[in-house]
Image 1 (cartoon, rainbow, N blue to C red):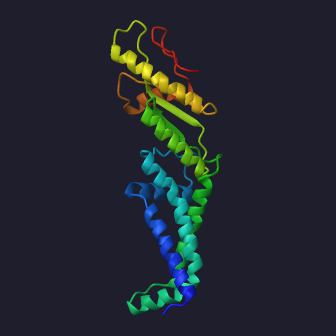
Image 2 (image 1 turned 45 degrees about the vertical axis):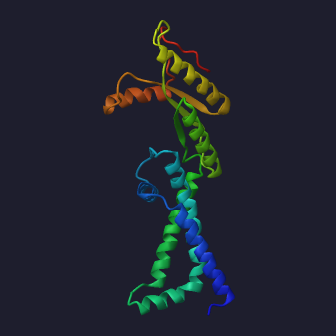
Image 3 (image 1 turned 90 degrees about the vertical axis):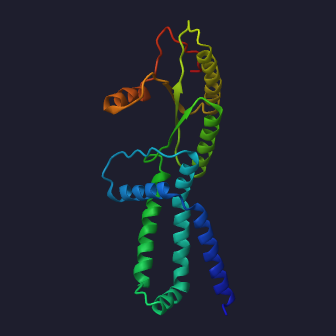
Length: 238
């Protein structure tokens, strides 16, 4: 029979494992986090850019380090209580599991995860750039993302609004004009919601961005504001 303290310890372990299970990301997110840990350890590059997955996957990825750090801290706290039991069970099953080695590796992993968390929360080292299009659902997802980033204490102050349509002033394309009007509506909302943010407008292009040269030309518009020709509509908030 377990005494009350052991039952409480087991309950804490069970609750911790349940929290961890709910937060475990998919293969993509786990591999992404492993890559973050690798880069933090090696620091081979001065700047690292992660092109993240859609909002839901990204939020699970961002929450994973905090949850894992808490889980490892709890395991460390409980190691003294359950360590001998783990060693005994390992011996009964014929496993050569060294308790000190295992918990030593967990502590090493915890230190790296703590460093990753600290870098995530340091605005001098990490920032998150939101990319959206000027439509309702994308604006909703962007707001959700920014709220969560604030919760995780991750810096974000840039928004890129992509695929903006600027039809010709003399255009007879009804669909083009209607879509431009819709985009202008949500672009106005973006400027109202994020007046303190740096907002970058990117036009819808007539070709696919492929190859180094196209990427270089496209990236120029990220640092130099896009100005459409005089014969295109440009009645958006500034």
